[in-house]
Image 1 (cartoon, rainbow, N blue to C red):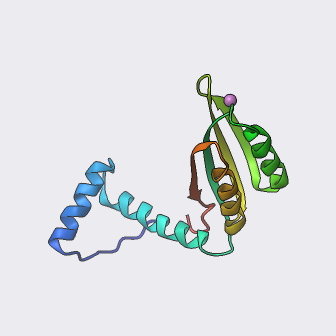
Image 2 (spheres, rainbow, N blue to C red):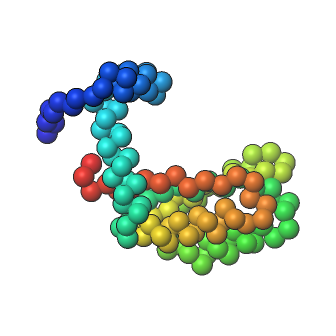
Length: 135
Ligand code: NI
């Protein structure tokens, strides 16, 4: 059930917020505020020992010596954190690997760090989300 509440803001802050809403293509303030509140909760969950979900993306050159073996080894060591993986051959050199991960925040972050720090990974990113108890 939706409940209404009113918020008081300084003119300048509200102007900035309305600009943000337009930039991010929200159709109204409420949806933008809901998303911002959820972001805060997700960030908080990632700071605790709770179970979270995330997506790790890796771009790497598969010609780099032993990179494929290292990536596979790390994923097998921590297989219990990995829900699914997708591998796309971007071009002759580059691969994009996407891992959907789930587990305790610190362990998921550790997996992402291990993979992203590998020599030959040109770009790596962990997108943090959550099952979200309250949404
Ligand atoms: Ni590939």
